[in-house]
Image (cartoon, rainbow over the protein chains, first blue to last red):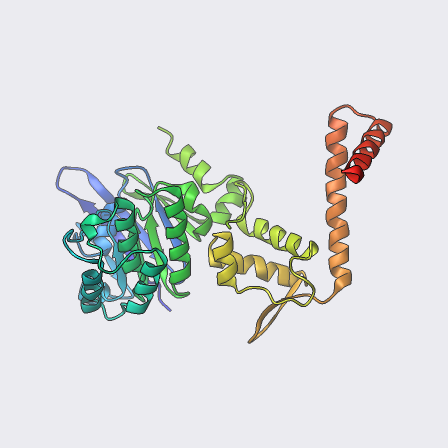
Length: 233
Length: 124
């Protein structure tokens, strides 16, 4: 099977004379959890937005399951943006209907099960939920799809450590074996053990693409420690 | 509960050691069925592929075996488990002796301390 994601010579500039991404080549196989790591401004969110067709490349191209980003790829990519886009006046139930309308691969029973386990009522208005709970609701929606590629931009950024464990657990329990998860974060030590592979981005370029255990064997240190070394300020 | 893993060693090796210890200690008995890869991965909070690799390696060593349709099982070879237990105990003993010697203690002193501790534990 061909890789789920391929980027060829991908470059992006916002027209300010700087390259957010510069000649990036990347190929992701199916059935992996991949950490996209890099300091602020290294190009993580630019790459994620390009994959989701929210930006267009200045140069180069992206293929997802062989297609350019667009309607076909949105059917198989489940995306958790960094910021919430949910309408605060909606109830949790409205959100379920909304996702069901939009995505053929949305599994309502799975969403309801997870929400129930979290003790989140279907009639609660999003506005009345805490920030952490809203983030959990959003992740539940995204993980309730049977997607081929999940893209999670900072999924554990704003929540406490217990909620973080819950979120990682949700990710581990809900993705299917042939799906790939690409997740960006700077909380590496929390997430290192669940990753197959890490990609380090720096100034819009890939400086490392290796499995977690390769890093440990070759460098004799954890990914977190290596990150602190590579990106020492 | 998440397993306690340290930072510098490859994760799959640590998973192997942990499962091996669970077999030696009897948490998993000879012939018992192991939980699925996914279940073990969630329990340990690690990547399922890494857990898979740990189990395949244990399989190569003969400690677990898989049956195509029904899952993975602990070996029924109790001799093998006993042997592993002995190996592990010897490893701990070597460590113990190294630590004691690093304190500057002589053999007789170590023996005396050990016997005191032994008596203390029996009384408790």
